Length: 290
Image: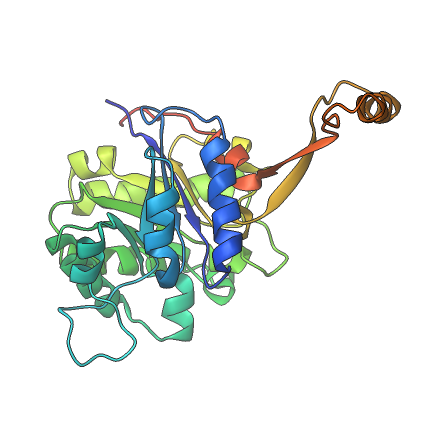
């Protein structure tokens, strides 16, 4: 059995209740590959988890953006793995670069969080990646290997882990990671897993890409042999506008619209709106196990 493509949408700290409802409505109406081909998970802020779970189509799933390292208690502002399980949330993102950099989460702390979340029955999107300074110093693999080792030291069963490579240097810096650069790191990560966690783990663990992926570059990235999906940031909330019949001229569009209006018919739809996230989901392709 091949590695099923995985697409996660990280909404970060964005959205209002009404905006979330609109995005979910558009996702629910989209035509995408079946669950046999692609697994889709969206990750809204904590406050919208129950709302999104209640409205989202059944073939898409929900993830939290973080959880605490241990059982709940006197940890103001934190959310425990047990709370997420109680809400019926199956996934959680841990080790995201923003939390590593802004909140000083160490490799060991992230590893502990991942191990605890798994022990409570959650599935984990585990993030690793290097900064621009680390990239330019040639230490990319040393950095991501150390981050991955902190997971492997605490976890023996990788069945419920998706490993997300985030090249921090290619996010919001104006620099772009090429498909070849992404494939190089994904390939090295898979080799590391084979040498340190075993051939079965290396062959079956999905390694997804968390750089600046969008509708324009997703197909070329998805074609890379060791790239098993995406963790999408801004593009998971971005709505793009399409002409409803792209082969028609603008003049004919306008004519049809005006004729319909003059006959008191429903106006001809000049445009339709779709989250860019849908284009990324449609790039899915199942990868053969190594």
